[in-house]
Length: 208
Ligand code: GLN
Image 1: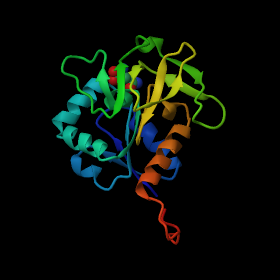
Image 2: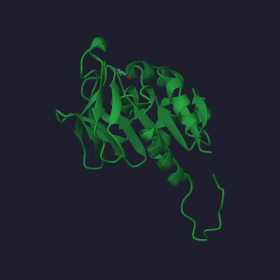
Image 3: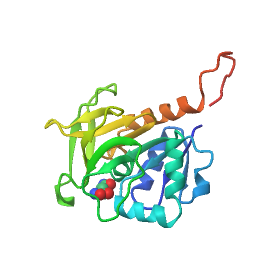
Image 4: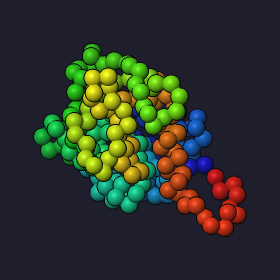
């Protein structure tokens, strides 16, 4: 199976581990640089982006992670994870940095406080099947998206809440907490495509 890491410094690590395991991935938690080695993909969970940013820098993970993203590692970021993937923050706390990679400007806590968290059905044209049940928990919104990135989902009021660029996908909401597996499947197929380039001989069977 694919080797998928879940960044486990803070946030909803367990939900992602469960989802990825149920989809057949070989899942490991990542807290140190050496744990990035050999991964086919990485999940950046929800949590508190400013805390994760500080912990990334405190553990010496920031630079290696930026390098891994630039080198083409497949990454799925949810909520705080989306914030970490954005090139620009509209309103980070003082000194807060992101890893970057998606040409987006993200606003944190765009829907208000924890009490104003909500679930809704989202149309996601890139996914087959019914609308996505999405949980927004002190969620960010994508205020601007550059031409290198592709929008994936908007709320009925037009606000952009999911995007992807190359091997990176960022979601404002938490599919892992409503049992929605299609984004994780999409992420795994991106990771698989990057790991196993089509080979001309066609004789490679059972490589998975
Ligand atoms: N508000 C959080 C932040 O700024 C994100 C919330 C979440 O990940 N559920 O990082």
